[in-house]
Length: 347
Ligand code: HEC
Ligand code: HEC
Image (cartoon, rainbow, N blue to C red; front, side, top):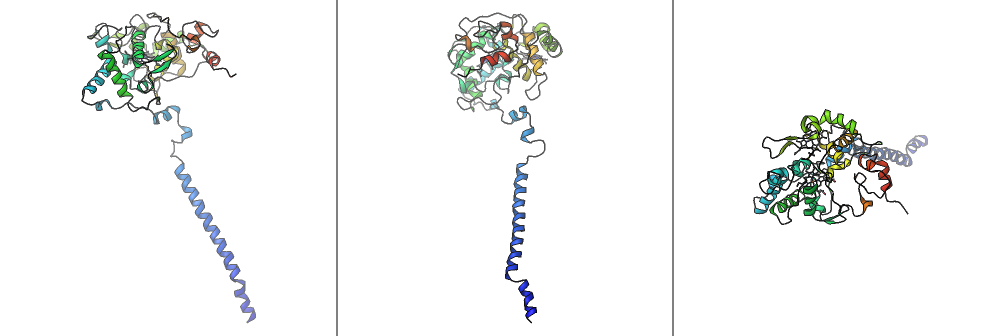
């Protein structure tokens, strides 16, 4: 009897507790492991959308600014003014060009030729951040600039024209349009996709000769020989606006800076191109910019520009400069060394 009693002793209380503990540990490990597995599954993105493997363009597209729907402009007097502003941007020449029905004060180009889709296209030189950032300080004038001043800058320089009065219905309408376009942009912020793309620097000067071949291959068909453009049959607007020659933008315009021209062209030309699907490489964009900006165009000089010459952008093509790089290098590059020298020196 004693030996029989010893058996249950072998499976006694201590051993039961021991086995129970082992089973519990195995169960716990399984449960914890399962939870870790589940949470990892949720965090692992579907194939092709891993954040590490998206392109810069895709990442920008996800948070990209979009203009408000202009069908929603209210049917009020204020709405009327906004719509007139949009019309003035899209068809400037009909109102303010040499044949314009309001006042002949500009060269026949439309604002929209450079500010695509009335200034609503991502990286199409849009007006996303105009209402949110003006009035603001600009180094070109060395002072605080109003929206009116900035608009007249483009009329005088890009459209080779004369200023619009601040209180004219046309100026009020253009501003109303900018306020509509930027109405969802918080004060002082600049959304993704605003303005123009910035390209990577070349380690050589941009080359007008190489740019001529790019031009012949990708641009000539529309903009014509030497960028003279093609007039619309109504002879008021341009079907293909001039890139050079006496009807084009002046030497004081933003596009006369290579970085602005190259950035515009890269994301928008040939016409219909978007920043997601550029046609030209950065190199081709820089070279075609050099070619077009080496052609003849109206010369306009504003003596009062850049009161502090050390604030001139690296690609401002006119001296005097605060550094010792030549005017040619400031126009065509290589820009890397100039940018490096412009970085604020640490004390
Ligand atoms: C030949 C091309 C061209 C034409 C035409 C043109 N612009 Fe511009 N505009 C530019 C460039 C280039 C810039 C500067 C972009 C930059 O530096 O990022 C600019 C900038 C501006 C800005 C400042 C945008 C900002 O976010 O700070 C305003 C406002 C503006 N233009 C209004 C107009 C208006 C209004 C018209 C028509 C009356 C017009 N532009 C016609 C090329 C043009
Ligand atoms: C399919 C025709 C077409 C081709 C090809 C084309 N463009 Fe354009 N381009 C246009 C049109 C149309 C506009 C005006 C857009 C608008 O008003 O909506 C324009 C506007 C421009 C502008 C701003 C306005 C101006 O006159 O300065 C520049 C700069 C420009 N194109 C450069 C180029 C370059 C460089 C190429 C070649 C890489 C090119 N384009 C190829 C049709 C074309």
